[in-house]
Amino acid sequence: MRIAALVLVALPVFAQEQEEVVQRALIERDQRTGEFAARVRGAPLVERQQLENAAARQQLEVRIDPPPELRPYERRKVAREMEAFFLTLPPPVVSIDVLPALQPKGPQPLLDSR
Image 1 (tube, rainbow, N blue to C red):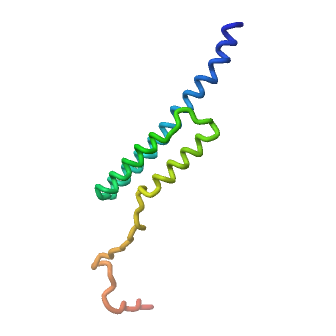
Image 2 (spheres, rainbow, N blue to C red):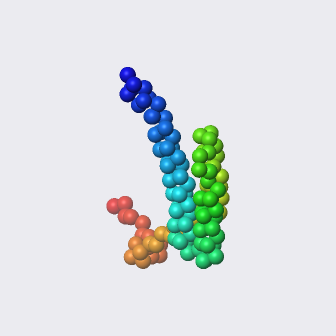
Image 3 (tube, rainbow, N blue to C red):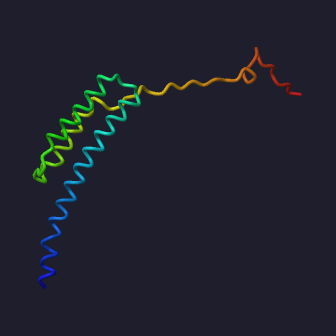
């Protein structure tokens, strides 16, 4: 009976620790996504340094033990700060090349109705 009670008391503690790890991992993943996007689009060194500084500041600002109701807010706040560094691509340009052999040459003869 004591063991069962101890297990029931310990479960929320383990769940809370896991939740903190998950929240930090999500923030770190968002930061890495922003850094990757900056590298892919060939961002200048100054912009990449700003991104790294923002990531370092965010890691310092993240509370060690925020209340559970503020965790999603902190993730959204970090995501908003990182939005300036996300990869944005122009829409794709579609061009259709028709082979010269397939292009019509002059007026087409009408079919004989014989």
